Length: 240
Ligand SMILES: Nc1ncnc2c1ncn2[C@@H]1O[C@H](COP(=O)(O)OP(=O)(O)O)[C@@H](O)[C@H]1O
Ligand SMILES: CC(C)(COP(=O)(O)O)[C@@H](O)C(=O)NCCC(=O)O
Ligand SMILES: [K+]
Image 1 (cartoon, rainbow, N blue to C red):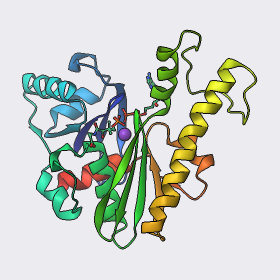
Image 2: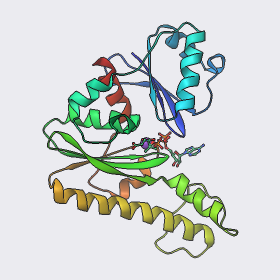
Image 3: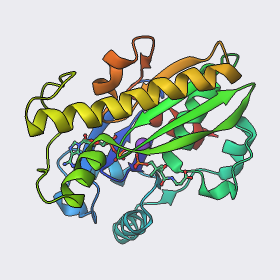
């Protein structure tokens, strides 16, 4: 099965025959040019059909057009399948992000009798609660990169930093102060959400995924890091 999952920063191309092992290609999310894809991805895509999903409508539209030009059949996963496996009260139902759905579906199907707090640390960070067999709701926060950028864009003197680098408890220069502030703001928000969600679901496990997941592992020692959670959920969803 071939999957294309479009996030706000990265687009993942993936191929899997068992839903457990994924060959992946991670591209910046942009208007796709199939002629620029490295081997063996053009051949893989041509074997189609390709399942397409994401949270950037103009990029999804561009992918659909590009696949159409190449004569590659394209499918989208069926919302009714998600609703059946993950009942929820999100309003309107269709507005629940594709990446959140994939992660929730993987948690629901892989851990059916277990409550889960699903944290996806991507461009934005989502903290979603799956408990008592339902998606109970969640939180959306700015991600690490976006939070750093906001300080640079909203001030005259603060530089635009990458998330790399040491994170001190107390900064003694501008860069260290920003890194410390932004990192600990987000880590504390995650810890706080876990404490609060566990008042509703005391036994909930913590699942961490997304491009920045590894950066939050030390702040969340009881979390399970599942880097392929979104793709796993997308695969299960596409299978029906
Ligand atoms: N070129 C880049 N631009 C922005 N963020 C990047 C880049 N490369 C890596 N990142 C990191 O990836 C994170 C986004 O994670 P990812 O899971 O790929 O996002 P999404 O699923 O939303 O596309 C950012 O917060 C940042 O730390
Ligand atoms: C919350 C998100 C921006 C997270 O996606 P990301 O930025 O990590 O690519 C995305 O799931 C989204 O656009 N959701 C739609 C709104 C919602 O879920 O309510
Ligand atoms: K995400």
